[in-house]
Amino acid sequence: MTITKNTLVELLHDEVGLNKREAKEFIEMFFESIKSNLESGNDIKISGFGNFILRNKSARPGRNPKTGEEVTIKERRVVTFKSGLKLKTKLEGFDSVTDE
Image (cartoon, rainbow, N blue to C red; front, side):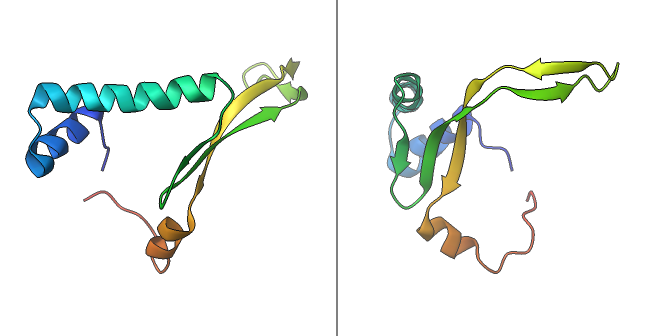
């Protein structure tokens, strides 16, 4: 199952009772807060869910898969996700995840 912003807006509308405009504003502010904190170099911890961690990757040699030409992959900063203990515990015992 893919969860979109619209899916989250609908859930807030149906489950919490926010009108759709308020729910959309809430979702936009939530994701904007996450983005701005990551842009500022801060890791994000969502208790009971997991952590979004900034990681610096150094430059390394690579290869263009089409041409086979060797290239240097520039150093960059990436975001990784590490699930929290509560989420890991809930997912234990599931061999595979499928869309419903």
